[in-house]
Length: 308
Ligand code: FAD
Image (cartoon, rainbow, N blue to C red; front, side, top):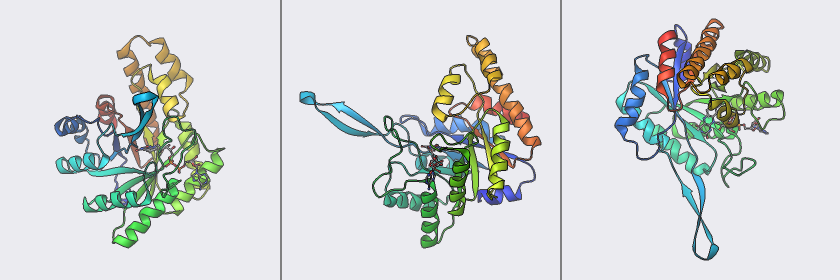
């Protein structure tokens, strides 16, 4: 079922989940066991992230270096196929522009069509490590809006219509000069054919409400689904802002730092903070909440128990 139809038919807000494909070597049973705890809450769909191959330079003879393409994780296609096979849930593979030509993206779309996948998240992807700005693959796409248009055109040519999600940034995408420009660029993705928006995680709901208002004012009318992640350790106070270019509110930072040596306390603090965000979002009319599980089912499961 298409996510836009799931949203339209909902009787109450629902939870969706995002998982990262495991590193190579993890077995199918291990993957499915890590997802099983979520299934009790009947999520209508599970997103599976997509990761660009990394480039490694390995030393060779005589001081030379050779370039190698390294893939550390299983592909989102393999992971989606396993989940589809095991559980009654829609899978939403992420598709990125980075590292792929238009032809390669077309091949992946053919696989998705073959698998009966109806929903795709279309993203640009990040720059390679050490690259200052994102560089598109020669013959590939520069912006997610181009990818959305390509998915729409693939659908027309192949008699299929994917429901397409795109990313939105309540605290602005770090490359955009200001929020107004970033929202104008988000609108381009919707005009190219996106059906819904899932936001980057945020830890202060005020950012989300302001973003939602600005999107509506700009004429973006598709559903906007907030993305949340419960923090689980004091270490994430550094890694999360660094990885996702966002702010963590001072009250949360202060509370976690005060218990930095107590793992259980930090886990609890992150869980309670995210629960309060969740309760507030549900009071404020969101259609769904998307949880970034990032390899940790336990805290998300606890929140699902409380609200869904
Ligand atoms: P775009 O929408 O293309 O925007 C990128 C930047 O370019 C923005 O600053 C935007 O304002 C600007 N821009 C857009 N269009 C134009 C234009 N026409 N002219 C000038 N500027 C423009 N990354 C992964 O690698 N794999 C994943 O699975 C993944 N999943 C994600 C899921 C969600 C919900 C979100 C929010 C992000 C995800 N990301 C993922 C991260 C994402 O790939 C990065 O944030 C990336 O830097 C931007 O992707 P985008 O799709 O938002 O890009």
